[in-house]
Length: 359
Ligand code: AMP
Image (cartoon, rainbow, N blue to C red; front, side):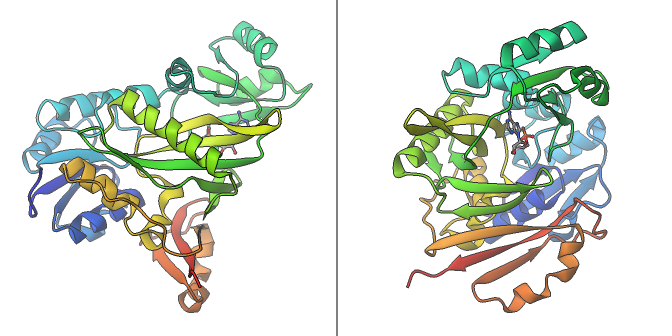
C-alpha cells in the first residue's frame, strides 16, 4: 500500500492522464507523467513529467526509478515498453492485458471463451477470408482493423450488396475483423474498478450515445431494467477476474432483444479509465479516476453512489469548447476543459456534467 507522498507514474499525457493526476493529488499522492507528445495536457498539472519516446530505454529507466508504481491512460502503450518497465516497477494493470486488448480479434476470442456474447465475427487477412467472413456473419457488417482503431477510425460498414473488397482496400488491406452489424436497442458501458485482492466495485450501467463515431452523451441511470444492469455488471466483473486486473476498466456493450427479454453483447474492453465514466467526477461519491488511483496504490476501493436523480455528461468536441461559456451558469452543470490548445474538429476538448438533484 503506497503512503501519501509516494509517486505514481502514468504513461500517456492526454486528458485521462490529467484527470488521473488531479485525483491522485487529492489523495496526497504525486504523479510523474511520461509522454512523447509535446502537447500533453497532463504535463500542465503535475510536478514532474518526461517527454520522451516509448522506446527511449534510458528515459524509461529514469522514469521507473523516480516512481513507486506505474500505470497508463491509454491502451496502445507498446508491449515492449510495458515489459521493460515491468522489470523495474509494479505495472498495473499487468501488461498481459494490453496484449489482449490491443488486438480486436484476440480480445473477441478472450470474451467468447468466457462464454460471454459478442457480435458474430470472423478474422480477415485476405480477400478470400473476407468472402468467407461475409458467408459466416452476413451483411450488413462492420470491418475493423485489428489494431489502433478508436473513435470510429480504422473501421467501415459494409452494407447489404455493398462492395466488400473496396471496404477492405479503404482499410489498406490491413488484418481485420469482420463483425456482423448488431441492430442494438442502445449502447451501454460498465466502468469497474478491481483491487489487487480481487475486490470489484462497478459503477452503475451507463447509457451512451455516439455522434460521428465519437461518444457524445453518457447518462445514468441507463434505460435498462435492474436485471440487465446486474447482468452487465456481472459480465464486467467476470472480465476483470479473467484478466486478474488491477485498476479501472470499461466494458462497452450493446443492448439487444433476445426473444421477449433483452440481453447484452460485449463490443469492446478499454483497459483504462473511460470517457463514459467522466460523469462520476461530479455525479458520484467517488470518481473513476480516484478508484483507479486507489487500486494501483493498493488502497481500498470506495463504494460508489450516484449523486442526484440523474446525471448526464456531454463531450465538448472541437469548436464546441469555444462556445461553452453558457454552461458556467447552467444550474447543476460542471464544466471541465482539458487545456488543449488547438480545438481541431473531432478533438475531445472538454466535457460538461449535469446533475439533477434528488428533490
Ligand atoms: P468500436 O470502435 O468497436 O467501439 O465501435 C465504435 C462504434 O461503432 C460503436 O460504439 C457502435 O456505435 C458502432 N459499432 C461498432 N461495432 C458495431 C457492430 N458490430 N454493430 C453495430 N454497430 C457497431
